[in-house]
Length: 244
Image (cartoon, rainbow, N blue to C red; front, side, top):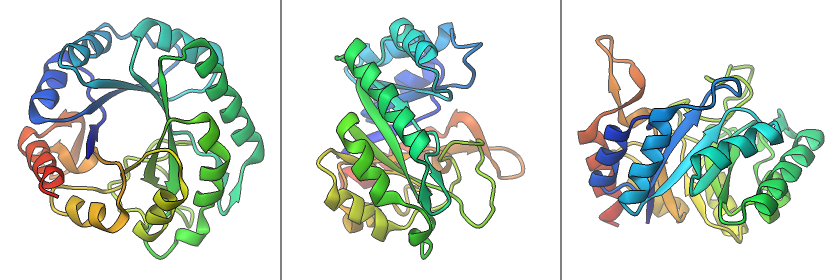
């Protein structure tokens, strides 16, 4: 069972995640204009020293900018999580561009694996997002899929134009269908916590589990703090996954 955690931006926290038993440890680059982040590059080196896989999410899709990021950071995985649907329909232009981007990465960096987020709506709203169709279209240019929650009904995503970090569960029935359909490994994400991850893994039978919001530290008002992990929550998440 692969365990993955994102928004790890500093070497000290990267080492802590590795010590907790996390397999894929990822960071995020917010802007194509400020993409050289020395501490994040140092984190990639630390992750490599621990024998884990490093992952980078660039929140942009310009091929030249993405190639610069990969060349400088040398991650194990590059992860794309931009939204590729228009409500219940596939955005064919966006999907075509995503496939070309991923194919270009594979040609230039054959040693780097590609992870693609496949959006899934919240429970009972699975039909409102073309999850399975997106999976079929993107499988050939991807090495991994990650499920994540896409808010529907006019609700705004936390990061505009991208899927994830909602803290909300995705529809596990659709996630299970994606796992069964896919010929590449699928990592389950979307609102997973130490308390619910075992149930989600038993139900969907994926290759791994990913947590972000539910393992963050909390501020004085009880809200999750982005880019700061609670080591005890992470350890309990790992234990819940490994116990299966």
